[in-house]
Image (cartoon, rainbow, N blue to C red; front, side, top):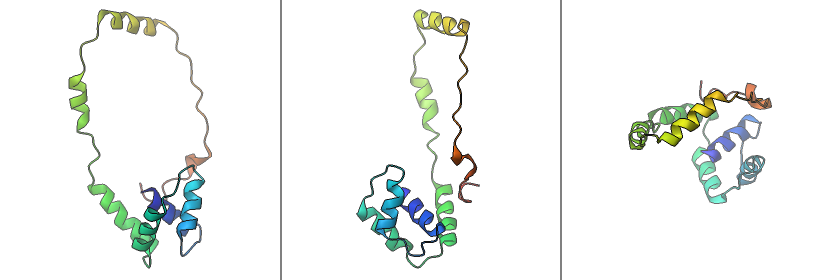
Length: 118
């Protein structure tokens, strides 16, 4: 998915024919090593298609994928009852004053998903 995202980002940035080098540059800017074989596969699959059509098709495919939410009840059932020591620890945590955590502000908050996740 990261290769497809980099391809679309290249298109949105004005590169009408992204190549492996441009995808590698985008991925590298966020610390991801580019597998040239995978990048080439995405480029070949997207060649000649409209980016809006690609996004629409991809959104439809994503909506049919399971989200993996079914494992949570099984994981909850697998837990054991807390011990007496754990109860005392929880009481001590409740009694201790909580420190306020400062949220770091990000410049990325207002970017949005380019309509992919709206």
